[in-house]
Structures are given as C-alpha cells and as structure tokens.
Image (tube, rainbow, N blue to C red; front, side, top):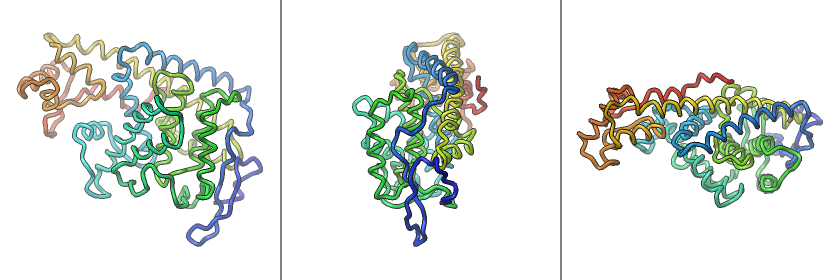
Length: 386
C-alpha cells in the first residue's frame, strides 16, 4: 500500500505488517463518528433525497401486498450487487435456478454464479427478518454472511466467520484493511456506533458513513462488498423508518463503479467525506426515482393484465398475481399448487399465452412460461433517472 497516498486528512492509522514475508502497511480506520461536519451546501440535496425516499416508502405503505410488487426490486439488487464483484447471472438464469435449485458440480460450474445471486436475495430477506428480533450486531452480520456464501465456491472463506488471515484489495495491494489483532476491536466499535443515536447526522447520511466503515474494515475473507450493500439497504430502511427495504444502490454503484471505489478509497487517504456523501445522495435520488417508476409501471400492469382475459377464473387470476413475485411459471408447479391435473394446468397457461400475458420459453423442460412485460419493467438495465 502506497503510504504517500495517505495525507494528514486520512481517517485512520497505518500499521506495519508482513504479507508473504514482505513489509507492508495496513489501514485501521478511526471509529465513527468522523471528525467531519455535514456541510450547508449538501442540505438541499439531502432534503431532495429524503423527499424522494418518502415517496418510495409511500408506495410500500399503500399496497395491499407490497412484497408481491417489490420483490423484483430485491432480485434486481441481487443481480447487480453480485455483478459488481464479477459474478454474473441474468434474471432468467436466476428464476430458472429458483424454480429448480441444484448444487454446483465444480468450481467452474456456472451454477455457482446462479446460486450466489440467489443467496444474495435470501440474505436480504433474512436480514429484514432478523431485524425484527435483534439490533445490528455481530450475530446479524455473521448470519448474513453465512447465508450469502452457503454452498457456493466461497464456502472455504468460512461462511459466517470473520477472517483469520490478512487480505488486500487490488492486485497491487492498493488498500490493505486492518490486521487481525485490530479486527474485532474495529467491529465492536462499529456495532456500538450502529446502535447509538448520532444527532450530528441524518439517518440516511449515517447509513453511508457506516457503509464506508464496514468496507474499510473488510471483516470477511470473501463477500465483503455484497454484505456491505445488504447492510446498507437494511440500515436505510430501519433508520429512516421505512415499511421495508426499498432503496437498493447497487445499480448506481455499478454504473459508476470506478467513482464508487475511488470515493471509498479517498475517505481513507484524505478524509473526503463530502465527496462520498454527495455521490451517495445523488445515487439515492436516482435509485429512488428509478424504483418509483418501476413500481408505478408494475402497478399499472398488475391492474391491466386480468382485463385481457376473456374468460378468466379465480385460478388464472391468482396465477397472474403470482407472476409479479416470479415472472416464470411451470405447468408442473401450477398443477401442484392448485391440485389440478397436468392438462388443466397447461390449459390455464395456454389461455394466458393466448391473451398475450405469457410466452412459452422454448427448448426448456419441463414446460415453462414467462411474462415478458414484467421481466422488462423489473429487470431492464436502461434506467432513465428522473
């Protein structure tokens, strides 16, 4: 790690260590809160971000079954956050894997990627559930990590356990996080801060401060970026008193990946908190508006689809509702769910296909259909930020 990059404004201390018998420096971040005052020039952007988040939260509070519509946002977060770490899976691959989960047969098996992305989705759900009975704490973070890395190629990184060896970020060891003797102390202080009200900063700003701190500590051998982004969504929801996690930042972070990484690094080296928070508030506004737009279009589609059926039944109408949770559906699953014979289930899906609601997925067995409109609204990556 290049010590010359660290100015007098750095937000931690440098400690000499040995890496592969070579002398190196590791960075130990100072505990939060930072020695930084939120600047007046950012108040208008913060107010804009909070107002936009309030509109998004309003959607969650007014829907009869918000999870049915908002689960696409969560799965999209799983796809984009994993992609930031070099793990790639399409929405179709994720859904087909969820319909028919399987274990990877080797390190190179592409099932690894599908399972990792599916695990991220499970970690978001698990974290939301855990926060109903516990605060942000070591146990919650460990359980999230165990969920994320359970049964995938990173399982040798000890899922749910903090790292027991030194790690470095970047092939040139651009950033070296705290050495093992400092790790638990850093995490203890972070846990204390996360559960202590800090009147100096708005809750949204606090969440972004903690996101930096977690990434700087880098407590696990693998999965730190993804766990940090899971925690970010959970913190924003909890601290901003939202009905559920609705804001997911990974698409913005991926779109501006170099800036995301550089901003985190510059906090450590020169204390560039203002640039980081400005960047995050911009992302909050854009991602919240993007989520609002997607939710509005999904709601409109949810109302429109049943009207396309000339002769629908309670069963076909329920199938349409379920498509918003998972836009892929198999004949065999419909047969099992509604306790009808295969021919009847197939007939239901053919009616939906004839109404332009479903399309058959070619060359896939068992016979599978999907909703192209739901898939497009929820997972197209061409965001038009408002």
